[in-house]
Amino acid sequence: MTLRWFGTSSWEFAFGTHRVLVDPWLTRFPSTLPNGAFDESLPLSINEPLIDQHLPGADLILVTHGHFDHIGDVPYLSRRNPGTKIVGTESHGHLLGAMGVPDRSMITVSGSEYLDFGAYQVRVLRSLHSRNREHSYLAPGVLTARPQPPRTIGDLVEGGTLAYLLSVNGTDILILGTGNCIDRELAGLRPDVAIIAVPPCGATFRYLERTLEALDGPSYVLPNHHDDMNRPLGETVIDPEVMASFRRTVADVSPASKIIEPAHLVPITL
Image (cartoon, rainbow, N blue to C red; front, top):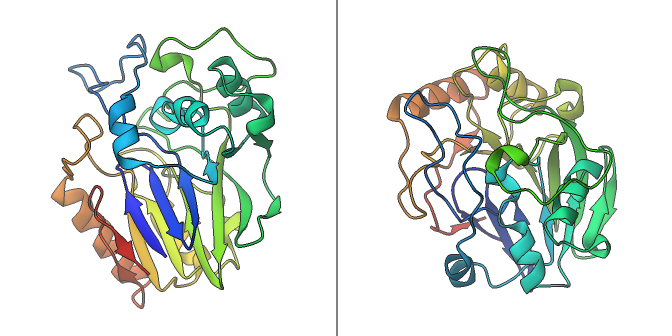
């Protein structure tokens, strides 16, 4: 299996003739105000040539939640590859439907589903979004009906958060797309590979420690969603202090785990 990271929580898993994507978002653009807050009025945009350059297609897209940096490019991928299925919540389906994704492309889940795709399996896990210092986050909310077509990054609401366990030929890979978890959903999974969102500077108690404790020592740990998302794809800019803290915590809580630090577009072979 080959993994590629596109920054934020955007991943490609390639094995045999199959490709599975998680939160594919390559259209990176400055999205924060001078004070560091997201500019919710910023118009959505899609860099189609960039997506065409790096993503030839996929069997399946797994959506962890509905924010712009997780589903913003999914409608274009769906239009370009009509056979691609997309897994997400009812809210994610409503958002993507408003952006032109046909209902037949959606596999609607809520957590605890165990989906068999023949050559691989996907276990859907309930999860939670990270919290900032004020105990809040960008664009919360769920949808029970299709909204007007989203125009700005603030129009793409969270819509519930999921995590996924991808199983391929006996190898289990856990993907957490944001810095929070539900401990009991992770307990007993024991994945071979854990892709874990790096804790933000927020107010969630011992997120990384609790995650590692619940997983009981994965062989490999990969940090996730820890780069400067305002930079273009290919500029892997990461705060060294944030990564140093991540490495220390993994070493303290899960000392047998090996850390693999990804860079944009650089293949990782398992």
